[in-house]
Image (tube, rainbow, N blue to C red; front, side, top):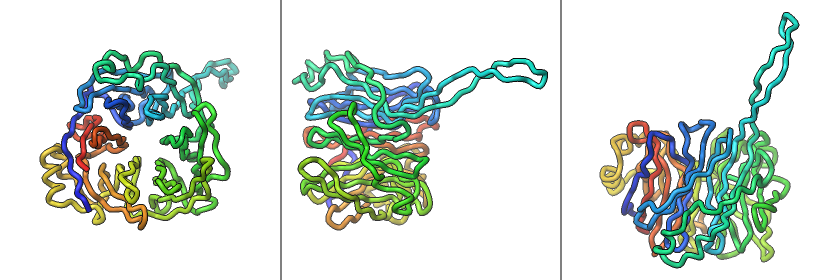
Length: 374
């Protein structure tokens, strides 16, 4: 198996904020990086930061998306036919209301009530980054210029965790925690996103509880592959395979367990036989560190990122999935510790770029941008 190598790693500066949950795309040799920024992992005021960077990592522009009384999570950049189309996120809205209640003395007293609703939201790009044909022109384009908030897509509480576009149709595996179910959504745009029934993976039909974060990828032989995180019963990560016809309809899924626990999966097709999987994983004897890995961590990692590889620790790394045999092999650790993971992958000029986050430096949570030699 060809060895992968980490060429460079850049930490995206932040001022004591919790920067996490990344996505990465490339348009005309510009990197578009987005992530959530909040005061901590579960803070109620999360916003989305979208950055434009050169392939060398130089920051060119930045824009912030936010909604009042809302935590925006897991942002996604949607590039369709080489053009920037949407930015989306999962929004947890905190709704405040005042109710009147009788006290024991029969007095009317006002009490504030807070409840929340969770839904997918998106913004449409009205200025096309794909119309800029050189870096010099692109530098004059403000990333955030003419973004239009479009509101909700999909059903409330159906978390469309990652969306992929194939032949101008969007697909997503959305999970609903309260039903222990994973639904397939598709549509020609987010405005018309609809889910198919029944769920493609569920406790009721498959005996597998709490399927959640999922990614899918379309293969050259009219097949589609998915990886789904699970956080209940056996905690086995699931690999799904299905067929897709000329009309874009996906058939019944076949599921099997993978050998390694994976969270926040991001898939990238290397060739007709191999898929690159970037994810947070549980370190074990199945993910051994070679001497080359240890040298890489020594050079790029902080102290805790070098030393914390113990049984059961959660790390971020790269795996190769053999499409034909469904075998998953560990190939490269990415320096990470503490709260970490949630990678994005893109490519340009025969280079592979990956983002993720780690909490290694004095408990500071930062986004990392790295280049990997494949």
